Image 1 (cartoon, one colour):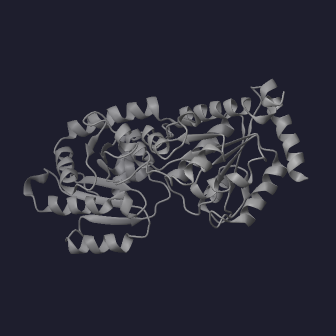
Image 2 (spheres, one colour; image 1 turned 45 degrees about the vertical axis):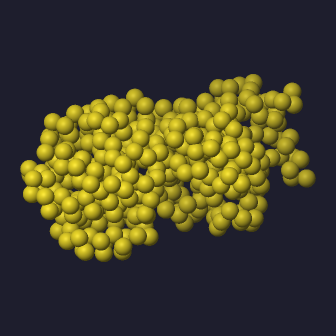
Image 3 (cartoon, one colour; image 1 turned 180 degrees about the vertical axis):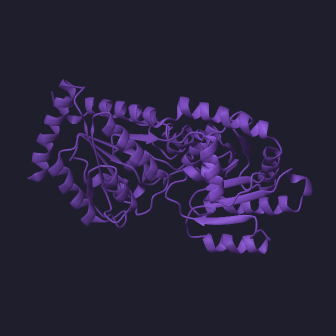
Length: 397
C-alpha cells in the first residue's frame, strides 16, 4: 500500500521537476560512516554548496557520526539512521520511512554501506545516484546489479575510477565523471603571519623543511614508504641544505605498527605522529612539501587541499592522483611503494625554494580551474536534473 502511494507521489514530483526545471530540488545525501575522512569532506562540502545554490539539501547519517555533528553545526538538517552492514534490513525499512515522509526528489548514496540500501528503496524517490570513490574494481558478481539496476546513475570521482567501474561490468553510459572539489577560498596560500603562526604551533624553526602527510593510517595509504624515505634521507648528508621534519596526521588501524617502524628506523626525532586532526588547514599552511604515497586512491582530496594551499606535492601515480598531479608541472609523481623515489623527490624539493614555489603556484591554478567545490556542485546538480527528466514520471506521460 505504501509503495503504491509512493509511486504516485514520485510521478507527481518528477512531473513538477520537468514542468519547472528551475525549482529547488529536494536532495537526500546518505552517508552512515562514523568517522570523517575525505569522502565525508566531499559530502558535507557538496551539501553546503547545494544549499547555498537554493536547493533543499539534507543528510541521512548516523547520529553518532562526526558528519552529523559537523553538518548540524553548519545548519544542515540531518535525519538519523544507523546502517550496521550491507544486509541491515531494519535500516533499509527505516530509510524507506524517511524517504516516504520527506518526499525527496533525489537520493544520493555516498558510501558502500549506503549504496547497499539502494535496492530496498528504489521506488521511494524519482532519482537515485551513487558516488564511487575508490579506484579498485568493485565485485564483478554484484557490481552489474548494484550499479546498473539499483541506481539510475553512477558518479565516478576520477577517470581512473570510471575505468575500474567499466572493467567490473558497469555500463559506461550510466557513469558520469565528476571530479572531487575543494573550497578554494578557504584552502588558499597563507599570508606571512598565518604561516608564521602555523609553523610556530608545530615548533618549527625558520630553517627547517616541513614535510606533511594527511590521511587514514591504513596500509593502502602507504605511510610506511614515507617513513622509510625519511630514514634513508637521514643517512644521506647531502640530502638537503636544511633539516627535515615530518608530520603525519590521521588515525587508523596501523598507527602502532607505524610508530614501531619509526622507532626501529631511528626517526623518532624527525617524524611526528599528530593523530586525528579535525581541520588540516593550518598544518598545510605550515608545510613546505606534501606527500601522498598511496597504493590505491580514487582521487586524493588531501592532495587537492594541499595543492589549493600552494604546497608542492609528491604523490604516487595511482588512480585519480595520477590525473591530478602532473609530473614536474603541478607536483612530482613517484611509483607506488618506492621509498627511494619518495626520498629523491623530497631531497630535490628541499634543496630548491624556487621549484617548490613554482610547482605550488601551478598546482593552485590547476585546482581552481578544475577542482573547485562550486564546479563539483554545479555538475552534480546538472546530473540530478538530467536524471529527474528521465524519471518514471516523465516516461508515464
